Amino acid sequence: MSAPISASVLHGARDLRIEEQNIEPPGPYELQLAIKATTLCGSDLHYYQHYRNGDIYVKEPISLGHESAGIVVSIGARAKDFEVGDHVALEVGIPCGKCDRCLEGRYNICPEMSFRSSAKSFPHAQGTLQERVNHPAVWCHKLPDSVSLEMGALLEPLSVAIHATRRGKVSKGQKILVIGAGAVGLLCAAMCKVHKSGKIVIADVQDGRVAFAKLKGFADHGYIVDRTRGKDMQEKLKIARETATSAMSAGDASASAFDVVLECTGVESCTQAAIYATRPGGKVVIVGMGNPVQMLPISAAALREVDIVGTFRYANAYPEAIDVVSRQPPALPDLSNLITHRYKGLQCVDQAFQAAGRSTDDLDRLILKVLVECD
Image 1 (cartoon, rainbow, N blue to C red):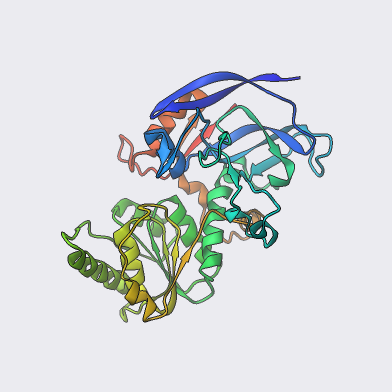
Image 2 (tube, rainbow, N blue to C red):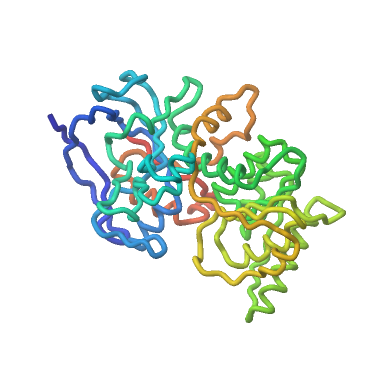
């Protein structure tokens, strides 16, 4: 028997509405979850602001949100290993499970992937900014008592960082540059700490974010990137080389290049600088999704055998994410510091997205992760 729920639904750019909907009982292999904590992602923000994300356009009203945790309220007849009241984090991408990519464990690049709050598939997979959702039990991860629901929501972007550091083969003693000190960049830096990297430098155009990264223990050194932009490609590449050299010098008198650069902005000039900043034989990991077409100094990569490695979301990362946030003594900086602003109730989702689109609030306080809590 269906039950009434409330949902936040996007009908156009900045057009969010609270709607009353009905939810069916969970299917045989599903759990019904009361969503309690959702942090807002940059992709959701793009949908909110533009009703599209890059070249992916929304074709029907959609609920946003995919970084979420909740409480099990009902269990499908054939779902195992869960009890009503369990706290879980949702892994919201559902692959086909049958294609070659799925069978080799790389389900994140499954061509048939359905991902909550993404308009890539149609009908769209509705997001988690709803009171309740039904979700496959196999993609629900039980949280230990030591992990809060807020932290459960952060497991999704932390999984992005875990996947990125895996793809970059980040290891002990390496010199690392993270470009972009937003939430994902900070989480990438945090995972480099877990891997006991030798020196972690974080770079951003916003001095407040760089200061936060150093103060809260996410990075050893910081570099504030000059906002100067070149008029033509020759000048742009010159600036990129200068940016790379300056970043290499941050906290390092020898100004040696980086073993791995994690590029978390998607900005062309940052990708250019990332290539120049990487040592011969090193890796540039493309984490940020920005301009889909970029002009890059490919010879500077090819002639020095710098690997440019792509990443997309994550695969098989939630178990490690739960393990890392559960360790005692802590292996990570305090991730709760990333949640800088909180909003309570679906009626506040519009305000939450407005905040998420800013770098600082009206009191000049840094905005990183915005959390929506549901009763």
